[in-house]
Image (tube, rainbow, N blue to C red):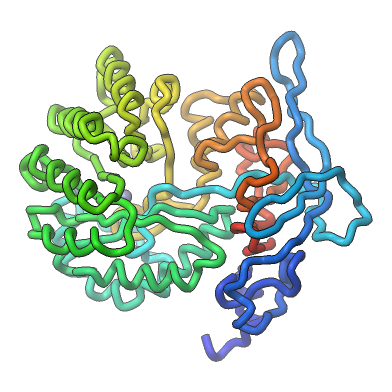
Length: 445
Ligand SMILES: [Zn+2]
């Protein structure tokens, strides 16, 4: 990195990295000029965007939404928040959004930032690793090498996510006897380096099983560190007991005031039992409601309709969310049913490129697009609703077309996209032109 100038680096990465480089002046996206490092960690001051396109309503014909109305505005930002949305003034001394559409910044709610190949040479996954236990054996061999560059690669993958409009990720991080706490510590360094431009929450993830690999003590140590969720993995398939692993996770989460987010790939009776047992534990322990999640949860895709309706109802009642993969091979998750019951549904890239998967693009807007395609959401209204998968539920317009975002006081984490409205952004996976993280300009394309 020393061999190229900082300016060249900024240009070549296409990114403006708060934490190392911030803005040329508060109130503008940096154009490649670096400021002294000491200004970097300060929050951006008051600044203004002009010619910002915002959605203002729906256009109806015969009762159907046929278009989205938009207008141009100025958006004032201060202290990491949107201070005001004002009438446009093209002559204002402000950063020019050039008529691009402002949307809430995107959030990737399931990714493994700690063990990616991204930032290194391309490498597709190997056919020989078929089962989760094969993968555990493979990781025990390969993680020591990966750990040597995991901080650098985590920073590179964060930059990729930023370039796709994402300013926040929930990352699982390996906690097992091979990595010990090093994967966590290395990732925490990357997060610290990116803290002004990217937000994270971490899941202590027993990737090699809790009991299968004797990870209990490491999980207990991780739980006392700066993490947000206790993870888990296929309790029956890996640890041989649904109750034993779930009881351990639930107790650890309760003892340390954390949430829960477990990987559940296994289907059939053990998969369903895991869903029902965990849901029951959350009902018995209200402290876990709203902060317990089942990642993947493929078993839901294989349930008969009446059982699916029943389980969805229970998940909604217990406030247990599903972090869904979209799609996963031929498995199509019942996302519309989950939404209909009021279950929280979120998504993420999971992998960009690693030994588990090679298909991630870094874009969660692409996930919204895939959801729209998979479930036949092709009208203006339906497409506009699909955006919520990328924004974790925030939509500029409500069902009736009433503007609900942005409002004064909202977090100033926004993207500018080259689209005329949300529906077009979802349908076209429109290019992200800029990202602002909590008031700090991060990325400008
Ligand atoms: Zn995962």
